[in-house]
Length: 429
Image (cartoon, rainbow, N blue to C red; front, side):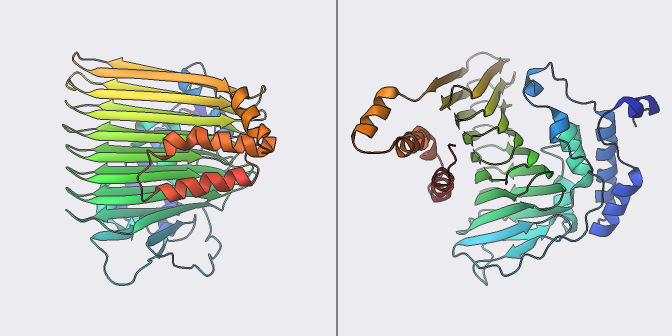
């Protein structure tokens, strides 16, 4: 526990233990989950604020991302009203203070997929914190102690649901804490979209998503952040991929005022594969900070990462990407690339790629670029009667195209429609 001296000098909000216990009572937690919450609370109290000198926090102030009043026990959230079923998509809505709202697109066959409120799932509680433990960091510890709405997804062995699963996190309270656990048994496959939506001035979001990809299983995971103006938040997403498993992860970052994302995969078996594609549109005075991590722990593992960000106005973007190839991960391959498109002379971007290679006989490389639009291409489009605003939007769309085509085919329309909608609404202003 933190000492009284630490409490007097610590600028973080420090919680009374009784509030966490009260939250556990309201959400109906069983004893193992209550114990995990209290252990996470201890980890939060013992973890100092991130060191701003270190590069992972050089470009983001943790106090801006921390909620001001994270320990007010959430009351039941607003009713969602009428929800229309979307053909081919199962919906789960996570709203603080409510049980998850599950809407199936098709009645009948579950195709081997079960969806359970996290605090009611023994397996979910048992897996909670395996991929993202409370000791992962300050924000992860805080989330693990105060999340108030979560869901457990399990896909049975050798099953592959034809429907897409969409999980929508609604930032509806001043402190929004959500948690997702996804488990694919051996040979299973699943396509998931996680959407972080809503929000507003003064709203802070803490969210953690853990994915477990079993032997020879395949997870396609799309993370979309479209918060309203003024929202600040920290999102962590981490996958553990077993032997012969595959992760196809994509993320799109568009909204909010201050956003920090930590996305990555642990390649925890021979021939495990992870491909991550990231896209961001940053405008106005938005600040986005992305960190990706690939941890190769076994031989013949493979990772690829492509990240693209377009910035305008006085926007700021930071990217750090770490590839770690462990001592027992010989004959592994890894590549990462980050490209930044500067649409304004006042926009700022920082890119820090990192390699940590602890064995021989591997292939590993990285690349990073930053630059403005090609003036000749812009002139060509304008000479064909296209307005400057439309020409810039077309060029930005082309900038993202190579990343879009890396997204799994069934999820690609969601990526295209999200980016096109944002561009049409003035996302470059």
